Amino acid sequence: MTPAARPAWVGLGSNLSDPVRQVLGATSELASLPETRLVRASGLFRSPPMGPRDQPDFINAVVLLQTCLEPLVLLDRLQLIEQAHGRQRARRWGERTLDLDLLVYGNERIDLPRLTVPHPGIPHRAFVLYPLVEVSPELEIPGYGSVAGLLAALPLEAVARRLEDPQ
Ligand code: ROI
Image (cartoon, rainbow, N blue to C red):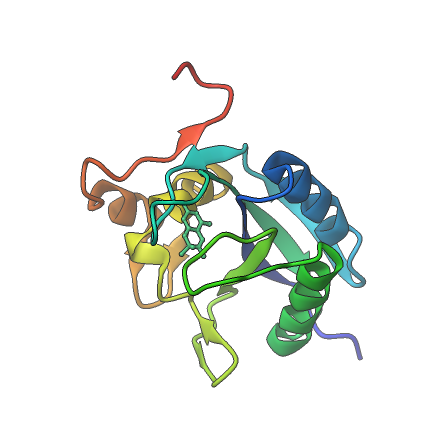
C-alpha cells in the first residue's frame, strides 16, 4: 500500500555561485523527486546574511511539496540535491552554494539527531517567514502557531525583500 501524500515545506537558500540559478535549479529538482509533486513555489527573496556579515546577501525561497516520501527519505534527497550543487560550507553560519531545509512536514513533530521538524529556526528567520507566508498564508506550524502571527512578531528590522519589488 502506498502511504498517503503529505504536505512538506522546504526552505531554499544560497549566497554563492549565482544564487538565483542555484535556487531555481533546486526548485525544479525538487519538483522531479519521486512520489512528489510541487504544489507551489514562492518568489525569490533577498536578505542580508544571518551570521557573519562579511558574506554576500542570500537568495531564499520556500516550496510546498506534496510527497509520499517519509521525512528521513526526503531529508536524504534534499542532501543529495545539495551535494549535486557542489555544496560548500566553509564555516559555521557562513556562505553556501545551496541549503535545503525541511521546514514543516504535515502535522508531525520530529526530534531526531539528524532532523528536527518543524525547523526550530522558523520563528526567528525573516528569510523563511516571508516566502513561507506567500506559499501558505493560513499555515499553522505545529508547536509554533500561525505563520502570520510569527511574521507579525518579527523585529521590524528583520526583512527579506522579494526580488521584483521596488527596493
Ligand atoms: N542568512 C540568510 N539571510 N539566509 C539564509 O538562507 C541563511 N542561511 C544560513 C545562515 C548562514 C545561518 N544565514 C542565512 O544557513
